[in-house]
Length: 146
Image (tube, rainbow, N blue to C red):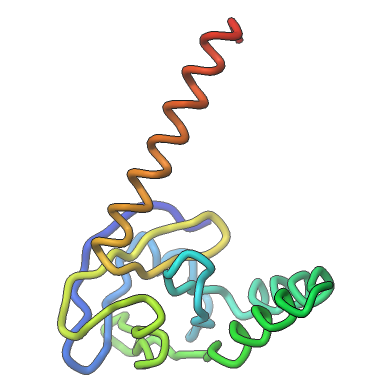
């Protein structure tokens, strides 16, 4: 399980240190799958989880647009090894997808079954949106008396 939100620096070579809390989710693995995320982030997946995600995505891709989106993800996905310092190299194409320049601060965050790397500003906007939805949901529950 991947949880937590950490601000780290992606260096001039495109490498980012994965926080210990995130690395723990990859325990027993020497690499992870990086792929473009649907909200402008980069996803980091265990290889087996990425295969299961891919199978489900392809099975659900009924329209031309959905098949095109699946191809974008699969054409950009890459397996990257962890180095001895616990870093991964984020390829330029994925950095461009996420709006990440080097060097810069990025967010490395847990997202349940995978981890994510975000442009710091985009992650702040995403968190603001998510917080707004949570607040509205809680207010609606209170109004219903739930």
